[in-house]
Figure 1: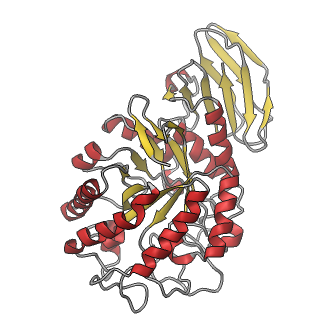
Figure 2 (figure 1 turned 60 degrees about the vertical axis):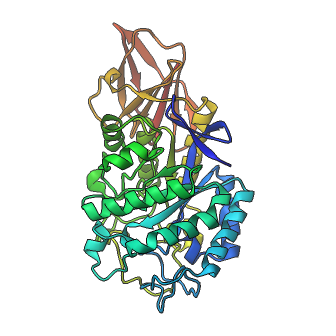
Figure 3 (figure 1 turned 45 degrees about the vertical axis):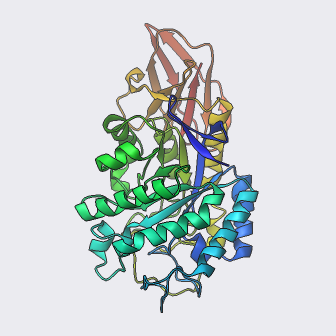
Length: 424
């Protein structure tokens, strides 16, 4: 199940075929999930159309603190590690989990060094007593990673939720990239960066095989799904681009916040991303799945950005409806031939940047509207076909419209929630 890059189109391929990256963030899989839970999880996500699993190789710093006696390094508490040895049992168990995933055709996307293991990141600034991995240990760790996981043809994500604002952080990740390129030259390499951030060191911008960004979980940065896509397209060489962490369904807005990200908000982030240039794929996330929360477990003293709120138990979070919306998005685009989507905001008479428009290579135009709306579009000819998909119900409608003086006007009031307009 080898993933490669179609450089001409800025798309991904798997085993030589068109591949739309539809991932789930299950960062804490290797430490928190029992084998029975894992099998049930895989079967459900497979039915929903997902094909990539984004997993942290090492223990997630803000995971649910489930009972566990299997760790990658010697430790007394599962929080502070002694970087003197690598414990085979941990890596053997992780490999067994990936064997199960591979049978269902999942591609593993494995984070090698989350930001809390690297000096000079925002995590290690926030938590001063966290256990940074010594630079001298990077090679033996990288060797163990490649020896254990290369047979699964993974994508290696060199960083997790990180920034590169200090020379020491950038140097750690550049060294890890060099090590992985040396030890595992056939696998793709990318980086997962912190939310609302677009800064890549020149070496990473040049040598990473494709780009991930994170629009994140902060309602104050509502425009990030499309703004970050635009920034990456503007700043860096053209490569496949993916929003690898939109807002998590069911996650709280902030400290003491009552509101949580809804299915509609999560769906909006996905469509805004892919129609703004991040069209190589999309990643779903549910609060309770990324950290594999289990009711009654001890509170993790590390709270990260502290806006998560109490998550749903993993068994409940697994069935949040947004996962099905992401599966529908992928199915829709694959049915269209996994098109290369070129943003075309210039055709919109409405100046709201929340409405996103993109053109397929065959001339078809896709427009996402966050809510029912009067829509005016500048077109040189009247479309032969106009469809409106109500994304809450997936019902398809043929709306009333007028076309005059190269302006198509659609009355889209009266629909339920957000809409996808198809002009062909």
